[in-house]
Image 1 (cartoon, rainbow, N blue to C red):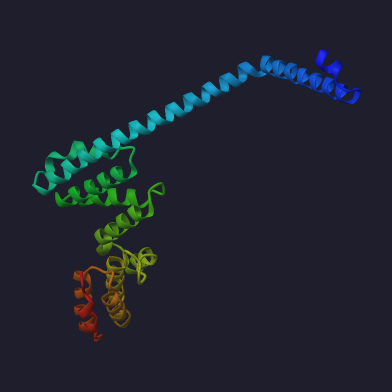
Image 2 (cartoon, one colour):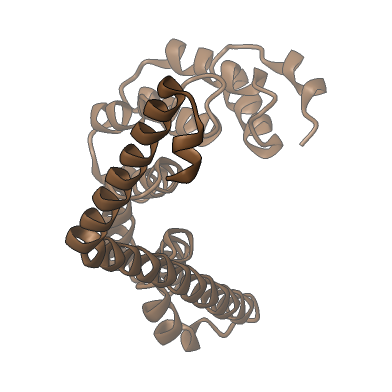
Length: 237
């Protein structure tokens, strides 16, 4: 107060008001802390616990994915070494992996193993379950759909095959080679040879299509009266 008294009346009033304002703020802060301090502290603890839990979960998922990836690699090596009969339990477990890529690859491998063993019905059921799974990434579903239609091709009507393949049988699409070839074969089943020939020629002209499919497309197009040989020099894959 001695400092306040030493100031001019105006300065003294301003200093007094500042002290009152600072005191009021301290009182408000203390009242706020007393009223909400426990709630704020609890919220901070919950936030830290949530962050810690997420980091733990993320680390755990990474370790599980790494282990599953190694198990899948071993299973694929066994299949390549003609030991497919022994990988059933491992693939069954991997199909439940929290990693979408690993679980879907395991399911696709299960279908391939079933088909190789002569269990066509199981392979079809597995491919259909993947193709119809809207929770999966589109490339997985499209691959399963093509493999499914390939297996069912002789048992479904050509117009059904054409309709199901339509989104994929488009020039430039990653699946155009396989989807376009199946579509062209369905057109042949309908007697639409001219359209089939043109489609085979289009497949042969797409540099993104694997060389084996392009070469086959050139040959079939030729039998249908469409010369697609000009596409052959462009085959680089």
